[in-house]
Length: 402
Ligand SMILES: *Cc1c(COP(=O)(O)O)cnc(C)c1O
Image (cartoon, rainbow, N blue to C red):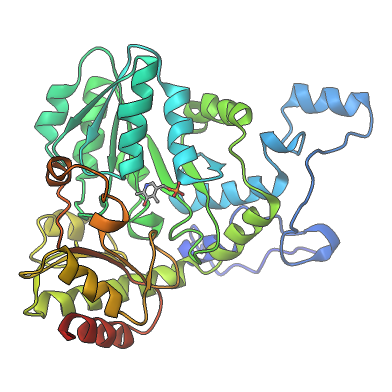
C-alpha cells in the first residue's frame, strides 16, 4: 500500500511549512513511530566484513562512527537543505563552530577574506585574532559599500563574508550585488543569514555560495539548544564536511532531536516573529522617548527599500536608541521590563532584551565601540512569540517609568 498522499493535479513543489514538517524524513521510521528517535549511539554496526566494504566503496549514507554524523542528524540536514534550497547542509554544535569549520576548510596561509564590518563580534574576533595566526589576512570594509568590497579584492582573496540582516544594526545586503562581485572576481561568497532565516530570504537563490545559520536562534527557536549549519552546493562543501569529521564539533542525539522538533513549527513561529517585530518596531518609532529605531520593515530604515524588495518579512529583532539617555538611564529601562528576559541571544519563543554596551561590548574600548556603532543608549529587543500587545504595553511602561 502506498504511503504517499493522493495528489491533486500537479501540486508543484512543497511549500515551506510542508517542508519544515516533512522534508528529509523517512516515511517509515523505527517501530512505526511518527517521530525520529533520540538515537543514542556513538557507533554503528556492520553485519560482516563485506558490509563494511560495501559501505566504503559505495559511499552508502548510513551511520559509521558518531563523529562523522548520525542518521537523525542526516535527516535534519536534509530538512535544512530543503528549507534553504541548497544541495547539502552540514550541522555543527554551534553557529560559531560552523563559521570556524567553513573558514578552516576553505582558507590557506596567504589567503585573504573580505568582510562587511557590521557583524557578530565573535566572527570578527575569530578572523582578526585567530585566522591571522595562520597567515590569513582579514580586510574589513564598511557595510554595504560594494565598491569598497570590490576594491579590497586581490589575487589572494578567497571569500567575501557578510551577515544579512546584520547584528545589531539590521543592515540588509543587496544579495544580488554581493553575489555578482563574487562571480566577477571568482571569489566565493558567504552570507550569515541567522537573522533572516530561510522564511524571510534565501541567499542561495541570489547566487550566494554558502549560507550559514546559528540554528541556536530561529531554526531551533525555543532557547533550548545550540547548533549551527552551513548550506550550499554538495561538491563545494565536501572538504568542509570532511574537516567537521576531524574537528568533532557535532551535536548530541538529544540536541538533534530538539532541533528537528523545533523545526516542525518553523513557519508558524516566523510569521509571529515577523508580526511582533513589525508591531513593536512601529510602536517604538512612534514613541517620543525613542531617538532611533533600527528595523528593516520601517520606511525610516536605511535599508528599507532593498529589504522590501528581497525579504518576505523583517524578523523579530529590533535595535533602538533612547533619547537623551546615558548608559544608566538606558539600563533602567531594561531593568523595568517584565515580560522579556534579560539575556543574550535572539530568535526564541521567549522575548529577550539586552543593552549591547553592557552585554557584549563592556570591555571593548570606547573608540572601538564607536567604530562598531555601539552606542551607550542602545537596546536590542528580540521579539518572541508572545502577544504583541503585551510586549508593547510592557515596553511602554518600561520606557515611561521612573
Ligand atoms: C548567535 C550568532 C552567531 C553564533 O552562533 P552560536 O550558535 O551562538 O555559536 C553567529 N552569527 C549570528 C548572526 C548570530 O546571531
